[in-house]
Length: 171
View 1 (cartoon, rainbow, N blue to C red):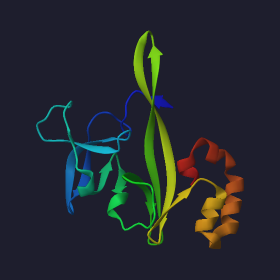
View 2 (view 1 turned 180 degrees about the horizontal axis):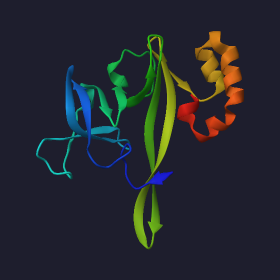
View 3 (view 1 turned 180 degrees about the vertical axis):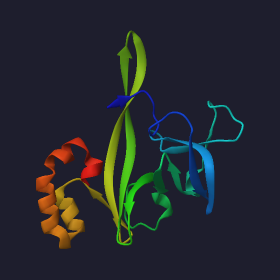
View 4 (view 1 turned 90 degrees about the vertical axis):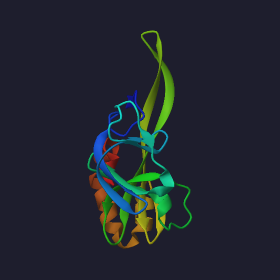
């Protein structure tokens, strides 16, 4: 599903919140540039066309369109090659289910004009015991949760069509 914009859900600024240098700020206007993995803040009084890229190492988390993102670089994670902002889709005391949103860029001609189109991609992770573990198959999930192997196998069999249509819902 290709789009013309590089942003998470919308290219317009949306009301959200941000935790910056351990201070939470509510009711701020934000948009998330998924292609560059940058959070953009619209300062009060600025036009819709101008924003400030927030300094990533100072951001702990932010929420935009009822979706929470965490800065994985701020956590004490052992051996990971993933960095930047990840959606915290689910979290409890044992583990968190995280999604890394990214976009790829390709040039295309539409009605004689050159456009950049951006395809959406999602990579799924489980954060457990300070380890970020990529999940992309039944075996990767059972490796993380071996005590639930039977349930995972059954769920996988019953929901193959869901996995093809909506991986977020499946995992």
